Amino acid sequence: MWTDPIVEELHRIREAHAARFNDDLWKIAEDLRQIEKNWSGPKIAAPPKPPVAKTSRVSSDTIGA
Image (cartoon, rainbow, N blue to C red; front, side, top):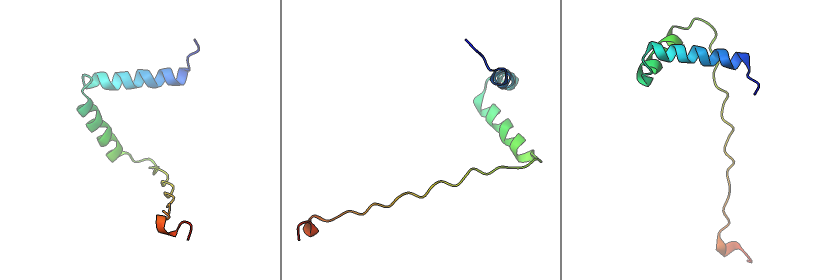
């Protein structure tokens, strides 16, 4: 099976980061929030969600009128 070296590197980084916090998800998340808070590089916002299409309902009394 072919493995992507970039994906493998990301897995190693993630595993090492998790090991620093004994795989405690709350501590990992707090560390990532602190990293994000202190990040001086560019911040990229998520793209806006597309608008939800409005549907109209036809009342039964107007059908066949």
